[in-house]
Length: 343
Image (cartoon, rainbow, N blue to C red; front, side, top):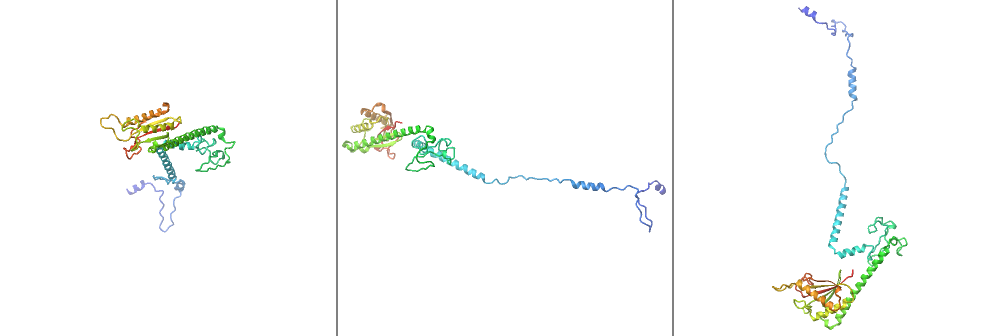
């Protein structure tokens, strides 16, 4: 059986023959093909030439610092806003006539303007479009005032023949402004004369020696206001009535003689104190002040003041007191005659 198994087993070709004891080393069979080592070398070379893959991970978060330019821009904006609201507050708290005076001061078409800008400076206003360094954009030689002295690069002999103002007809505007200023000055002189003559007349008359101080003069935006004021020992009207007393009629006659020299319109206003009427009386200080204003208008008309000169007759009761701290002060009872401006 062992021999049969040995015969059936295939021969081992690859097995090296055993060397006899003490003999030479066995020689391998070179007839069989041997595995090559080149593919492994090529594989190793190919793996060395592959480019490495770099993975970049970006961690989320804020960028770097942006600098401090935004702080400067914010500061400029806040400064501009503060200046704007300050300007709005000043305009709102000032009176309309003061704002008009400031506007006329910078307006080139009025006689009160100190600086007149040429047409070369953009819009022709104070904030012109061209640089002030440009000689053609410089303002005309300004008028000298006692408050300030201004100097321009041009000659101080007045506008030159190349002055743009002469080519745009601003000379006619200056003529109109000067004419208007002359009319206003003439009117102010007339008001001064009325005040001066009436004061002299009252001072020279013994009849008005004790009440001459009851006539006061006030310059206001509407014109010249002449107030005839009551006091403890002098009243223009009877208590609670609109009947004018004789001494008051003589005083109103002097006022009429003074204002008759002008043709300006007149406004008459009646004032009372805060003492109310008794219970059961349907009258009030409103009706009383209006009645006294109408009585004064009638007295002036009797002294050659035409009815066409009266522009306004009104009664304001005790809403405009002479002495606001004492509503019952006799000086709160008064008559105001205002010589109005023509313009």
